[in-house]
Length: 422
Image (cartoon, rainbow, N blue to C red; front, side, top):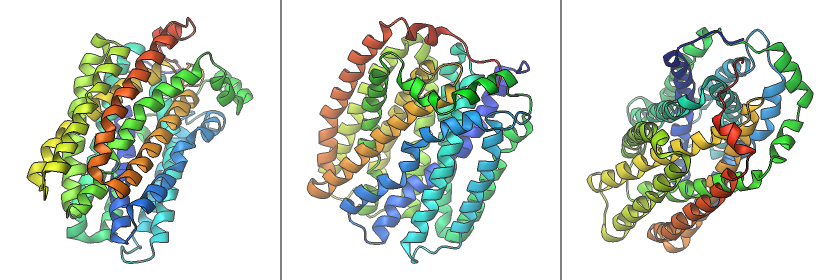
């Protein structure tokens, strides 16, 4: 059974976990498109290869039954996965330190793909651990901490590391990133109070892979997956092309790191804090709709920037980046809170993971489409198309969410607190 712990301690553990997730995510999210452009890949080729690198995240529901079933009783169901995977990921980072940007791109692609595999496996454990720790009333702030600390790690990986690249070199950046990644695991390593209940373990072991099937058999689950997809496709469509766009506008690694790796995540942090304050007051559906529609502002801003600015500079770009990513923080907290509500207490990791996989697939699909459109008709066309896409997305969310809420099956899940044991 879980020993009583303060909300602050719980949020601290969750924060450390998502901070570590943000480090490689931020670094590779920005460097991959830029390195692809550095090596001469066209936007059409990036539209194909970039989403492929994130296939492990789309398919991470395959890891969920493994995480739910195979683990150490003494270490805890999720903790026994989180710590070893943290060490493995740090090891792959160190191996990438021996690759040079001018070298064969294949080694870099393999390294990124491996990190995505292990990170997606670890993410299943982190999501499940967080859901079981947070009560319903804590999920607004819990998701603010989740999003906020993730983006703080994103700042370290996608901002500071890119800026240091021009100072200490590629090799040392990877060694430093691995070191910071290992340091971030100290809170979860020291936190040994959460144990897996033996009866719960046996019950979940019997379910095995049927956990995914049972998730998909729930009433109106297709509507929920469609809600997640409709919400996330806009995220991928609008924001995934930003690194390549800034590169094509003449920005170097340090400038891209400053804009997308420091200023953007800081704005997301502020958005997450604001969302945590308002989400319980507005309610789930109002938060999804209001915050989601604000993404029209993001698209309009990038349209103005790409059409009316002949040679965009950092001074002209930064305000648009700040507004867009503040909105991103709002919409992420709103969606993640609802996804937690829709996760069952007996297998939260599997349920949340299935929904998240659908969201990642939608994001990468949106990213691929936006890169293809940019290659054919330019960046401004992408953002013009994003306007009706955003409105359509929110309309779909509104209609489907109302249908889900009318089903009695989902209301008890939204009101119950989380598991006591882990």
